[in-house]
Figure 1 (cartoon, rainbow, N blue to C red):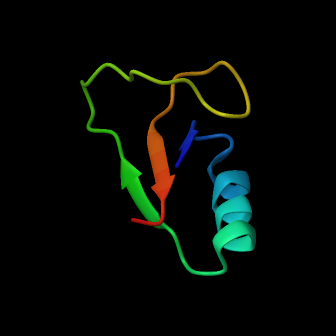
Figure 2: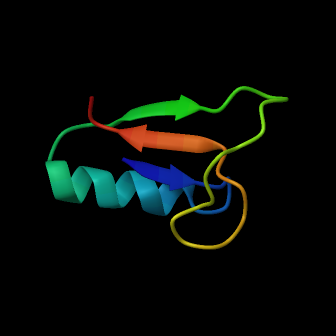
Length: 53
């Protein structure tokens, strides 16, 4: 599972596809909900979850 901000979503999707070799599931954290995680590539709040579940 990769947490990503808006700036790094393309990178997160590319890495997930390279790692798992299937299209990942992209989930946006609902607006107004406080993100519990930061982006895996910077310290910005995560607004997307990239996973293969």
